[in-house]
Image 1 (spheres, rainbow, N blue to C red):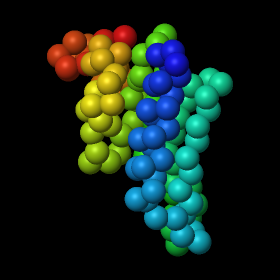
Image 2: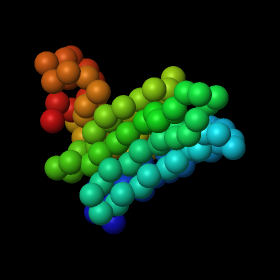
Image 3: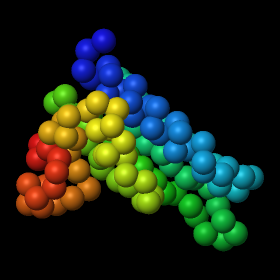
Length: 111
């Protein structure tokens, strides 16, 4: 299995586990979006809570140029470290949720 195929599986495994702890109900749906053709992976909450629209991207990954980009994380989980434990080199993880000038100060890739 090539590197990108492994990364796809790692991301799917993480997001599937994370979403299993989120709670869908009649008003708010937990959605897991796995676009393996374009390499976009998201955990969404979509629906209504009383009169308030809920449309929230809880976690978002992309795979670009052979690297995993963490674009959004609204949880207390540390998916970057979990990916490292799965075998992804730190330099292959980019914290896209950090401004580009700050990425050099993280323990991860810069782009």
